Image 1 (tube, rainbow, N blue to C red):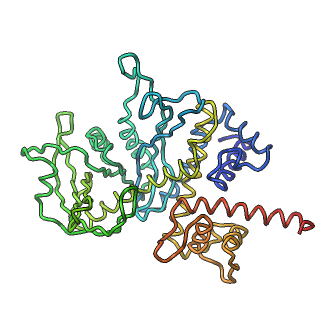
Image 2: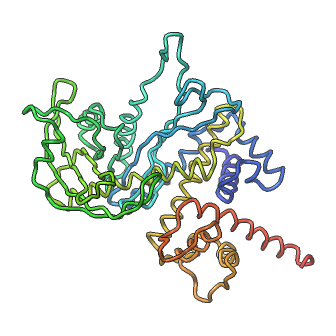
Length: 431
């Protein structure tokens, strides 16, 4: 940020929030001096959202540069501050509900390792006038196109990394596809189709693709979600290269992949995804890869869950929007760190735990579970599971790997244990 004192304060505050991701500023800081210093930091007029985010974005680009492929996930979520006295908020689902909309670009590898945030927008909607209109309101759909443009701009710094823009139905916009074509596709795009467009031969897009002979199948385990039970899914893959109108008296080419679940019970809703991409799909393996990339979009939903339910950003008690923006930037980085720890524990389980955790934290992870620290250095997965078990994870074979909720709850307990160790060492007379 250019000011060494402010840099140190930002780092310290981020560390405190990371140690206590379920607490707001007063609960995360140690002592009233830190609390007052934290509030002075968020009130500082020389500090803003981007002064905090830009160093993280530079680090994200460095992590991306080491990867041959990076999935740039985009989505919009609402931050509900209803009932709080914060200046600068706008309506959400209904006019009296107050909050912000957040639209970040969250980058992961194809194996779903979180690499960081590449970009972000947040805004408050204008209030409706007497005619029910929002005068001066910028089109929210433009965020998706702007998001692609930002990825395209940054791709120039990543000559050895191919970026793929991944979006859900809201990103199915001809304006986005046309802009990518105008820029000569510096980044690929992959979106879930919302519109059953008319093709030049008079047929409809979706049926035209389904009429194609299946290229093959893809299978995966569908994770449990709200109202949906976990199960194994097998989908047939239908693919077709099509030409569609570009909305500007021209045309553009894209590939449509329809992954349709087969052999599904009548009582279960079929899992079917209709995907559009600029990439040419030549075989079943390439089609399956696109489905796998789309499934990785779930990681941004997990990120939002940690940000709102773990870091509890919607409970921040800050009266002015500029102050809220600073705290939001810090918590967005903290939420990424929690998600990254969870995924590293799954994807690189044999990694030495000391590369991620401090020695005292490793001791605390074992102590919380009444276990002795082994002589052989523990693996990252072993310590992550112990931390999650302290947060409510049962750790049975059938439970799979820890999820974000139990991990962040265990991290809070772990920090308390570490503080106890440090106090006992500093005050041996109390023992």
